[in-house]
Image 1 (cartoon, rainbow, N blue to C red):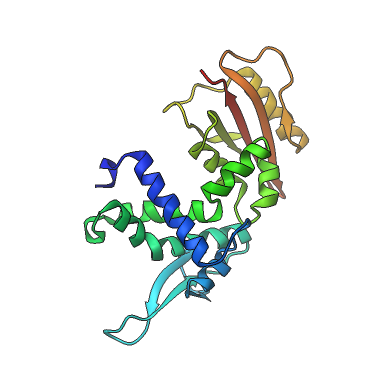
Image 2: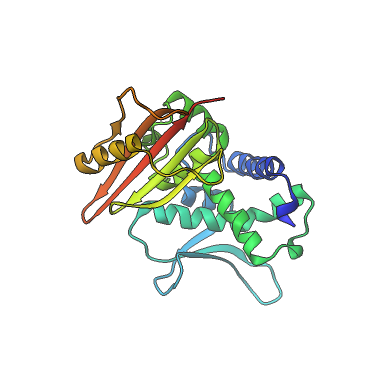
Length: 247
């Protein structure tokens, strides 16, 4: 059912729902605190150390009566993961609005489809398209600078959101010296890493600092190469942004 809906129509429904919900919560600028958002939407967030998943949306109340919307949140050290978990459950609670706009009955959507909508809502609640597109252009799509404005979103989530918007890019995420994923917003299967891309990543990996390729021998079709380090004790992650020339 959802696969039959044009991508542009689906994205517009998601963005419209996010715009509506943030306005209801009187959140008008980044960063979006998912905990505050949940509270202003009338949801209760409760810690549950016994949870075997990061979060779950339930309604607690008397039998046969609609109860208080409640987000059960597992213990999680990383603040960005807590933010994502709560944003996802907020997405679960408001997903019906998207289906209403799309003219789809909720009981016609399989669990995987509802989960997909909740994921899209969560990413846009933390990184709303209206704001993120403007800030991205103003900051030259610098992931580290965007993270300063959108502190509740992880570096990886920011990188993934770059794939939802122009300009044309390839994003490559490295974990512990290996490519974890490589995706583009213009081609279904990005080409293998070029030598300049590999050199830019290696400079970032070894220095632990952001790196930018300054050579003149960029491959045809590539106009910019930048890489950011997200290093922690015992873990090294880098995010490579490959800018693609507009045709």
